[in-house]
Length: 345
Image (cartoon, rainbow, N blue to C red; front, side, top):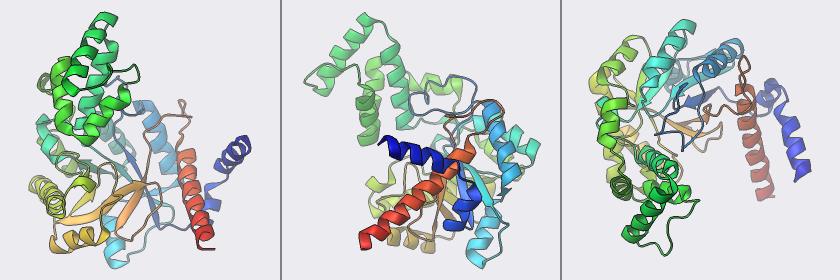
């Protein structure tokens, strides 16, 4: 295991041009969720995110080593075969959080860089909160309580949810599972813990407003859809899936008047039938390009993969970690490619 770690560490320091000669991609994508200098209770128990100066370092690195392309350029390449510049990269943000306007927008304008902002249309103007973010608030409330309050919470939660034992100290995964498996249960947990989601939305305003979305579009950025309410789309029926994708794209179109709206899958596009997605796109002209995750790995030519830039690990002021994150994405793709060859032998 140690030898594998050493080899992997060494591989991450290989120059990116070497990876690009082995695994050819016309363009790669990077996505973020939030950039903030402040602790955000509705996110900090879900994933780590970068402060503003670290994100600026990322932009400086990207501008120096890549050609950042707009959504229009990527769409033209996909539909018409228009040539892309070498080392093309598209920058995106998921979830439509308010920091996209307050923290990200000024830096993008400063460096004159294009970006696609994917929004959950049901949450615009802070009309609701994603289930996983409710889970983060519940985790914060439970584990920041004193011993007596936590014991009381645990007893009530165990009784209401029929747990054989009281909520364990490692109950973070259990709370997150509620949001993933049955969002209604996370609402029940919010009530039990006294987490007032409506009050939080009114005071903190975590999401973009419609006016901010319109301004971002006027600034020249692309606005895409990220589902209606950040659902796990793989759990939806084909009809529900179509309604969700088309409905969220139409909601964005009403604000921006753009002819086609790109769509980014929440969580993952894995386990969603590709023919179904193709059918939705062909039936509804409003649906633009699909965007997924999975680094630079792709299993079809109509879902554009992206790697995550959120984590500040290995970053320090003045030193972006994106080179290593991009190298890791190539390394994972190479590993998958070698694994597939072995599987067929």
